[in-house]
Image (cartoon, helix red, strand yellow):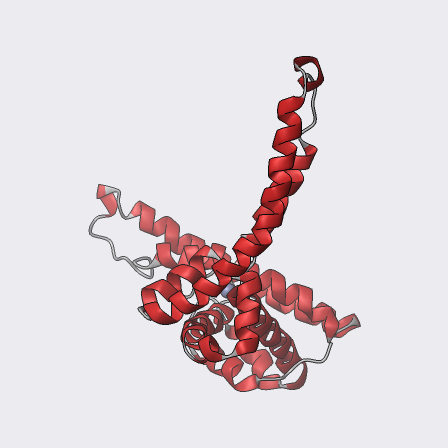
Length: 247
Ligand SMILES: [Zn+2]
Ligand SMILES: [Zn+2]
């Protein structure tokens, strides 16, 4: 796979003090894409065709709604709805036919009946609601950054040090990094990379868990006057570690 190498944002993310540098990049691009989709994309025919076919997931519809450009969102959503109604009319016809056949069946024929046909129609409709052009674009961008991260590890000893001193990743990004490593590394190099990121990940999960545990223990009146240490934001950081989302 030919990948675009964009090292500067990755190096910048590693300079910020965070629980997952890839989440920092994810957040930054997600916010930028809200502007891109509500701005120039509204006027770009190719992008509009993609939006009409796929639409957006709940999270990204909400982010764009909250951004306040109601006209841009209305224009995109209107053509997306028109296209969806067009596609749905085929499924709706089939659903009506299935219903009609079912209605004609005798009571005996209905015993032990299979609902396969209507389930297929339902699956088609569910698939229409399951796409998001925003998520696709964001996932592609993150795939490039994960590739760049492994590339930097391979080429730059300074980056290897930064990785060793980092706080690891959220679970999802840790998995993505492991999965992407064999594209560029093999043998002893791959082993060293896996060992490093895994050691960093486990050490940092344990660190955050200890912070979180202390957060809960602080609610015990016997610990009331003891210092918080690093625990005051332990809940946010734990959620970040478990499910992503930069804090
Ligand atoms: Zn992450
Ligand atoms: Zn989405």
